[in-house]
Length: 225
Image (spheres, rainbow, N blue to C red):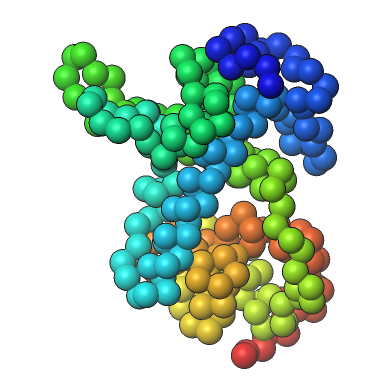
């Protein structure tokens, strides 16, 4: 592995072996940048699973705009965050972290913000949030095994098309509870709550529709479970 203490690696062309080529216009990253992206994605997945668990247990869930923001650095006198612990295990947690995060942000793979400023000697806690492109690139590097016979029944595909094609969040009354349950975080993960009254499609939901083009007749066929 290349040295992890040299922040210029975020700006130089990495060795060929360290670069994973992408299809579909996704950017290529060096080993260090990819390790950071993978660590953030892992914590993002854990948060998503926790929200799915709350969905199954009929518990109150946080809006995605809250839980998608992941704490990166620890507050004063606090313990290392989950992301930092993963990076430490990979041997890439060092003083060059800020430059690596900035490099990922410049590539449009994540956003950064500081929250809860606490006095003039503390700049607040850094939070990071993957963009749709960042999540897609992270998934590209660790694809899930393809499911056999993964075609959805027409009535369920129609519900997904309604959510994904809506101009903004789709009111929950527009699809059946059965469709919402199967498409939601507790099962397929193709839709999620945009707020208490509406759904929105997840990246996985949009990916499914791109991989399984919808018959134009489906939009007018209706149907129910």
